Image (cartoon, rainbow, N blue to C red; front, top):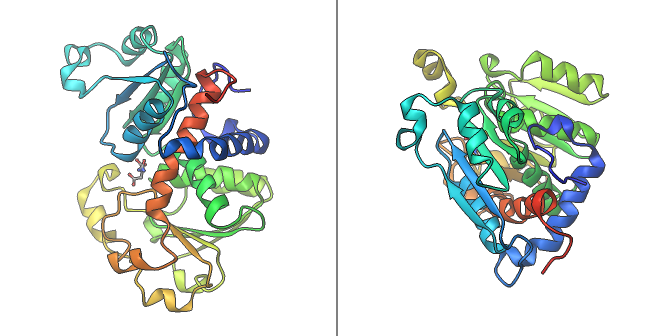
Length: 308
Ligand code: NCD
């Protein structure tokens, strides 16, 4: 179904396609802990990270290794021909001949789209500026399905909804599942109007408020994000909103018993570490789920039909 297809944003995914990835991730999850799975033996995944990354880069690497494949890392841009002035398009053309697929993270929105126009092999967008982060969304959905439920879901997206690419991608996917979405952010970090309009056009119920207390008692999932400091054109604007929200155990006194708290990580100060020990915190398991989900996606993009 996915053979040779690029993964640039969630907008190109149907619910059936997402469900197929999640089902494949279920099948592969035992191999994410170890074991013998050779679905990607002989395959090479190139990693091009022009922005910092821990989980995304390393879980892609782990996913390849767990399935017998290998990775090729561009490394820091200063150590590559980009430092000599080579264009992104040329870099992509060349690396696309060395690998079976490319993962790219870049500070500029639209860069993964551009890469896909020049790449002879599938391109996976691992974050393009404040744009999209579709593979994070697939692991977020997998987490919700495993730790809560995707049907009749009531979810709150909290934090930097303006610059946060994880919430942009997630919102589009949630619309496919008929979720009830509440957006909670400082006024200057609201979800872009275009995304809200797209969600509403799909018949999604979207509420917006500056006060988490208005919804905290009734929701199934609280998806917390950090303020994307690196995207602020003016550091003074960041200072105005820094530390403006924080999840504490006190706040959790009034939540549903089965509320789950998610976070794409890294966390800065928006979740008190005391919350980590509560049954609501699933963010560290969430980052593990990046492995089976990325295994599934890679297998569907560049692998064969067999599991072993
Ligand atoms: C996110 C990202 O890079 O957008 N991190 C991740 O991939 N898990 C979230 C963030 O950096 O805040």
